[in-house]
Image (cartoon, rainbow, N blue to C red):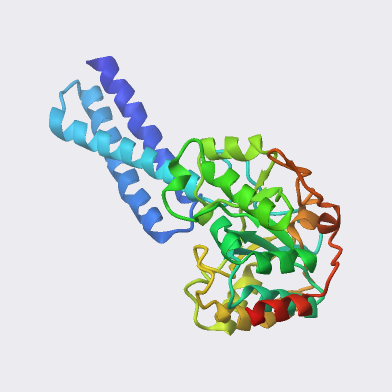
Length: 331
């Protein structure tokens, strides 16, 4: 039993050290608290087993087993959860969360649209500040309101893929069919094939990462977010965003929620002038994600369809957004 006891003592010690390290990898208070508890349990189990080995005494099997199992399994499980839910960590597949830190540029990115209450209003505010944004669109919403996404492309904003349904279960499917379905919807409705994909809620697996890269796409996370879907105060929201931004930041905002085209997101519309003014005061220039990362914004081919993306990728606007806004409002 001596070798088994030694092995378990080492495993518990490793788990306790792992809990301390994982604590530095997440900003979520509940996860940190859970790691503290599990790390303490693993450390206690390691000490108990070490003492038993030194004294050559036997531990009570049930108590020792429970402590060791809870500590080791719990810490491993939380580690997997942190890796799968982080928009910055690359444990489960390559993703980019920021651009070069030596240039005074940031990317304003918007998730879950297109949305009738906010998307084009945000685009108009960006235009008024001589800025362009990146809109990660949900396939089902693009199918419902393709006119909004077409207006964004026409005005030189960048479109990204943000899944088809934007739910909380499809990310667990190893095939991750959501990516191709959304790519088809965007390609059919607009004629462009996004080169950037953002996982809904930031949740990703190695299987999803493989599917994304097999499509020749880049998985994009972020390094600045303020939970804007919960905010009711546009100025407070703007202060949070601006205070966190730094050169190269990818800023995550939400012009929609879960692909609901009618949900009220006017709080972000009201916050946008404050955000843009705050970034300007810090000499940070908002640019499209492809510009920030110096990568193509669109693919030359969506599955079997060859699409014409040169004008969209270059940011050339063949028609004004004012006309597009009028078109949307008339519907």
